[in-house]
Image 1: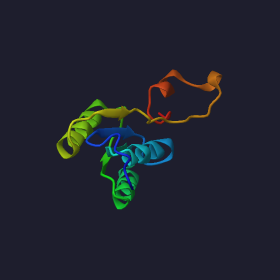
Image 2: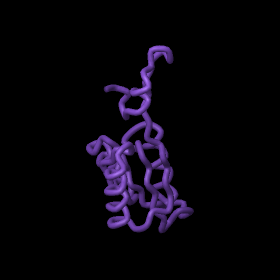
Image 3: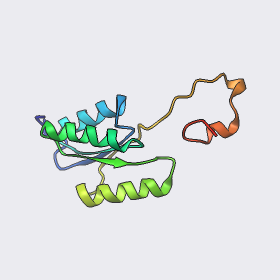
Image 4: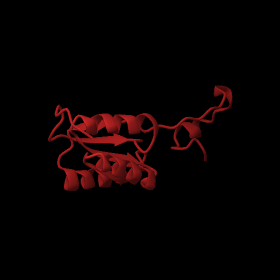
Length: 117
């Protein structure tokens, strides 16, 4: 991975980065020179993306993070700061998709990370 140097020396955290848009964002940031923390519920997926970035010459780590849990977020950010330095960039990409007609959608489902009780 050759860096264009625009983000050399910067550290980025991308949530929901084990796949999809988050993964693409992580690769873009790494390509610009940032060290990237791949934060996701899926630790194995986060590690795999980080390994792929490192394999292309970038700097990345996988972080297990449930963004609905404040303690998990704090622990993840503490690890990023410890291993990569201060956080300069945060991409809050994590999300879920629940397909359900609004009239059938219970309020409690809005408050849960998976939409399931």
